[in-house]
Figure 1 (cartoon, helix red, strand yellow):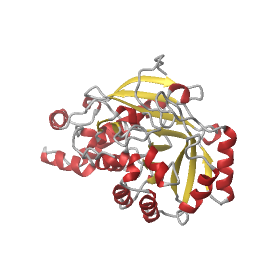
Figure 2 (cartoon, rainbow, N blue to C red; figure 1 turned 120 degrees about the vertical axis):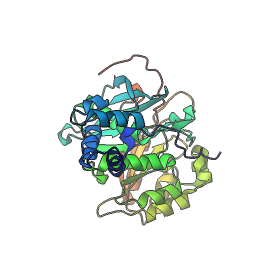
Figure 3 (cartoon, one colour; figure 1 turned 30 degrees about the horizontal axis):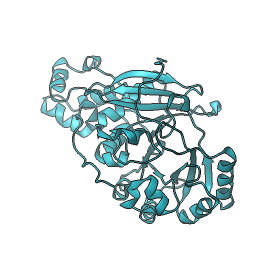
Figure 4 (cartoon, rainbow, N blue to C red; figure 1 turned 30 degrees about the vertical axis):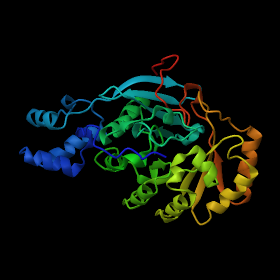
Length: 360
């Protein structure tokens, strides 16, 4: 595979990206008391204000100083589409005209009252997974931490409630944008703002092994999801070129070392491609590969898009694959396609113009 683009400060570090200690240093330097930092942070990350004028208890002079040093970078909500199953896809436009997407996914079981938000970490992606629509865009740029958390706050306003779970599984490879993603995690977890528990935050990766180790060093660490998708290096390299650099054995070693508190598991995502990775032999190899890792497996029937010559396995083949894993005592679940009629399902995000634009 070609070398990944180097991490760079190519997205503006706007006011939303400042951590509490950075805000405190700024307000003190401006001659204001330290408590102003908490006020500003709560406006940004608790109330989700989109203009400095909305910070009604912050002095005008301090707001003007903030605007000059760290302006709020706009993230415009452009289109909202609603799928037949209630999934909503939000397309945003960044300050420099780039399109990104996030997806609000209500639980199929209404009684659980669960709402998951899938957010993006990059414009496009550099990883080149053959089964993913985002890969067709190529790499645009990293999103800044402020642009990442702004997706959460705008989706919250749209839904009229805070999501119960956040997953970094939208456009881009989160661990390729490690610094901005981990800064966003810190912002989202802080008690002055949204106050998300790390147990409600999941970061997915195609397999950047050194960054998995760095993510595990965070205290506390979020949940880890690994896009595995094959049981042999030959197949995985064919559909995920990143495997040339970090093959399955190295990836699983990193998963074994990832720190897990009581009851937590590493999630392995496995996109099922008919005739590629869905054989009985694959189903029998997978439990052996995962031995020694507290794990669960999400089977994802491939969600089609124009281009690759893949197909989704039959329902019978998918169930057979699941049963062979269950027989080997693997916790395994089939992830039903959600929002596939609006290209919002796993692997379909490509920020393309919808056939019909629906505000909802």
